Image 1 (cartoon, one colour):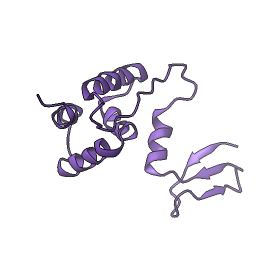
Image 2: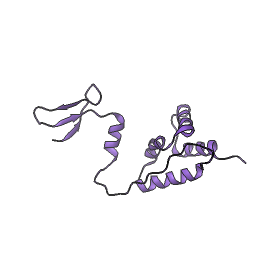
Image 3: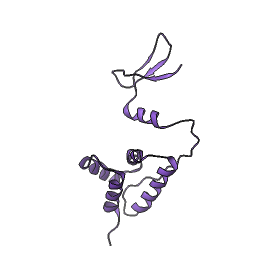
Image 4: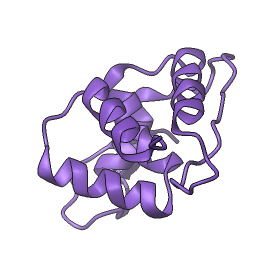
Length: 124
């Protein structure tokens, strides 16, 4: 039995094709992105950065340096780096990113990185 994407009206509805006995699956946009961008047979290591919350004891420059290392290790494109960032932000930092992206819907990674530094770098 193999899996094929199908445009089924209700999300995540699975059907068995009676002629081929194949499972057809409706994918959400997130599931399709993961399906299209992750090769499960690839032996490349996965590097997972720690989460950043924006708390006063955290260093945004260290987080960005480690996040950029994760991008390089995992082979993420600039678009993937933007797409995955919310997974590694929480609390104040996550709220900040949501607000920033709502106000600036067509931002680049460089603009997001600069905004994070401006918001969370300690002031002298």
